Image 1 (cartoon, rainbow, N blue to C red):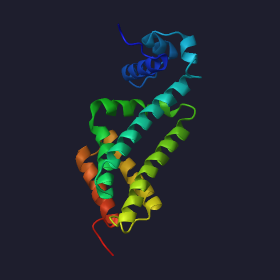
Image 2: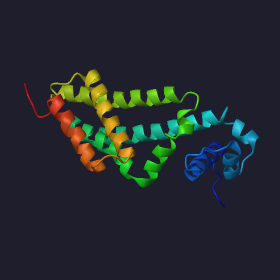
Image 3: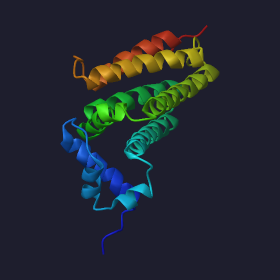
Image 4: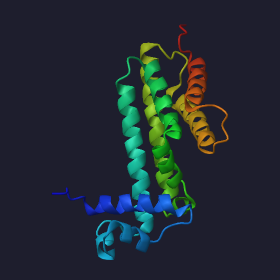
Length: 198
């Protein structure tokens, strides 16, 4: 007997499939509900509008990414290793075909124009920055990042990291994801005084 998939998940999964097939042309509610095999009434049980659906998709992927990176950082042996792991994990998305496609879908013109997207993206960036600041605070406490000002430095590391991410997503980068991660990490370690005492 097949496992019943909740309606909300069916709608979200169908929306991803439709977006993947749309080549940036946008998708209609009819397309999504046809792919999900559900009615308009079923849609409105879970979402107020198509924009609400698109934002739910963005938030779900964003929350999943932050949870993965945070778990990897928490299992690291030191703050320095946690920061390295976090940077590598974030940039590795650009080299994984399936997840890269998800990122591209979730940065399509349709989503960018969705009501509430700017606020959702800003929240995701704040969350990213707070994860980094938490690692830097640990490094400040144990002396592994003696030069850090955690809040200000987290903002700088986030800016450099998101720039490297955007460059990789645009395919204009001449380096691999691993090389880009190493460059960002090396810069961050030098700026934070990693390995320096006094």
